[in-house]
Length: 496
Image (cartoon, rainbow, N blue to C red; front, side, top):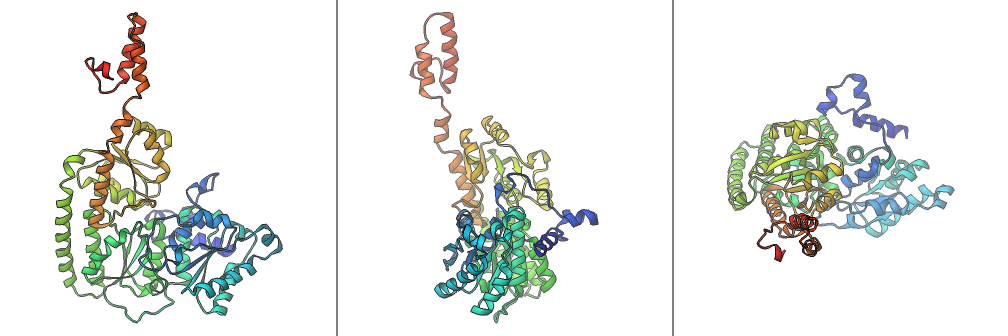
């Protein structure tokens, strides 16, 4: 545990983080940690975060050293997609029991599981994850992985991120540390070129990176490693020979990007593939970094030509939606890179942003939002469910974009809702992805079901008819009930 504590301390003392650089030496040493409170892992524990970052490496066997429930709760928790291998979709666990823990059989059972996976599947590597139970009983997964790698002749990578050490975001960072310590730089490619790049923090949710990769292919840019979306082990192991890196989610993997820059002189920038303007700027930034690292400057001209062509096509498609969506109000309850990139993307077609969550956003993310919205009142760190419900039920927003956990607040408030997080089924990246996002928003807002569910139930109208006696009291009740019949007039009250 002492080595893990040191690793956590080092992870949070991140000089690449502008917020951390502004602290004094004592505060910087404490990093961004805060005391855990009951329910702090409700959004995901450190093990969950590590699994999110590493499981999309698709040809690797991911072995969870834990009781069965740990793997059951973490398996397939993101909608990442693979263009080839499917081994990552197979669930491997040592299924530790109470008897194994009491009798000290955990390490022996882990070694046996590694051998069985090697013999049955012959993967290029096996990732072994520690969990709360195996960390608490003291199983040394690093020693077991080292011995198994020597015995079976394949990489066995320990991922030391038990859930109790912190949040999901800490697990993201510890996963990046595992890649730095045991994977990246272990394989020398024989085909390195001047147009090789890495993409960090791109998860290929619903296959959305496949909407971006053809653009890079047309420019002759090769993605040596996309970490972790649709990745292969050998690509990640040889990622140190790329010439430039684009970081999509800095809250998860900024330390990985900075360490690769320090060790192998790979410059990086943070960008987004959400929205037309941001996609174009990301392509420009990639080309500029490659030219600085020795690529032919002619790629800059080809990039601008590609951008002009693709933007013209996208804006033509979006023109049909502008009259239907211009002035519509959106509440964005997400975080990280989406807190500013999706905001910018929607404002490009005239949609008004009434609020965006910055709970998982970095200081740089928040500064971008301030520049885009020009009003800090539209930023909120967190909003209680009752406040979200009040805002939506008062019709202060025409639609809410969020993750699945808050969808029922919007549905209770009879407000359209669209999934923008990892569970979604539509890709929103790149030029085509932006068109798809706007199309989905249009479908959600103009779905006729919302007009129907906002109408009063028939029994309210029936009450009004039954109370239609001539007495003053009954007349008052009739008028009161009549007002509940939205969209009716005195002339058609009888048909209400």
